[in-house]
Amino acid sequence: MDTNLVVGAGFSGAVIANLLADKLGEKVLVIDKKEHIAGNSYDYTDENGIKIHKYGSHIFHTNNEKVWEFLKNFTDLNTYMHRVVAVIDGIETTIPFNINTLYDVLPQSLAKRLEEKLLDVFEYNTKVPILEFQKQNDSDLKFLADYVYEKVFLHYTNKQWGTSPKEVDSAVTARVPVFISRDDRYFQDKYQGIPVCGYTRTIEKMLKHPNIEIKLNTDYKDIKGDFKRIFYTGPIDEFFDYKFGQLPYRSVNFKLETHNHEYYQCNAVVNYPCNYDFTRIHEYKYYLNDISSKTVIAKEYSEDFVLGKNDRYYPVPKEENKKLYDRYLSEAEKLNNVYFLGRLGDYKYYNMDQAIERAIEVFERIVK
Image 1 (cartoon, rainbow, N blue to C red):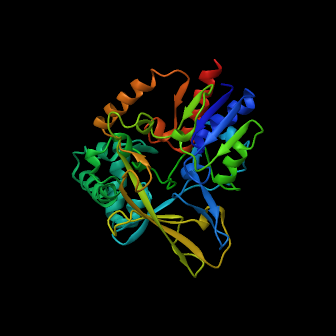
Image 2: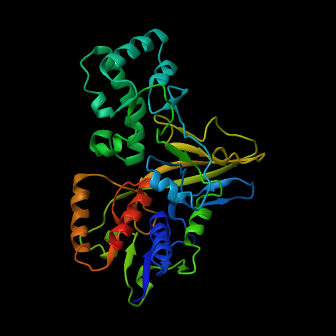
Image 3: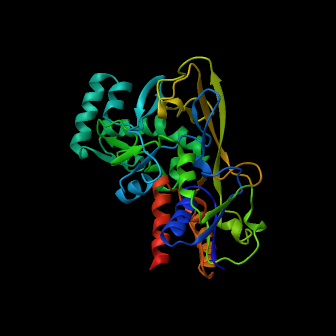
């Protein structure tokens, strides 16, 4: 009863384990079904000297100084600011769709007219969700809204989520808005960067504590014994043996390719909203400026999560799924000293900083 159990060695589990061990001096057993720590942020250096993000590109960004300072206890971060290129009508341009994008893909005279009208209607440096942006009466702005919807959102969302933007929760479509700005960074957060030692090494440092024991390739159901507290970052529906049914997720399949030249594309991430079956191509050497005569890319294919076939990535944000999650949450609230957190435990689309923030909040609640 003196030991805490943390299920999952990703950011959520590693942060709560570190705080319990370091701040409270308590024993912690961390387990994970995977053969490695770091969850979906796991990275490794391949035979070409390139740091590969096994589960897709992970870019750390936050406006939360507390989270940033916590992370810096375990790693230095570079000053990488993420930009995403999209191929629209065969033209490489930046997204979110912004004023620069206007001039890249449309005739200059039309782009200038649209820019002027945009600035008459919206404040500069504001982000407008696409479904809100479509509510325009002006014929030029309506043309632009329809153009952006089809060329940037419609087909990409169909591929990523298996449905149209209008059937996806507004929280998802708001993640890639129309940006009334010339700032072509994907994120505008105050703090942005990639851990210079990699994500795996960062989480390894979090877990390197005399009070922490780690067991990989270990399922929660295989663990016996009593624990002071249980922190469960796995799927909440799995914890309860799917008694109310499975919570839906989208999964992702990454197909790695090694190419015998220095670079494959112009940018770390290039999106293909209207072409091909994959959503985007990642080229990893950009993140830490790895030096190699070769390069490694990953083509990203979205698919439904199927139990036993692939991994859970993104909770599907629909009202019916929230109601199902709430039933599980009601069951969770009946338990003593069992805490659910993380993207799978909370069934929420967390960024890495949000996962860290949530773990800190859970810890602070316990301390009170």
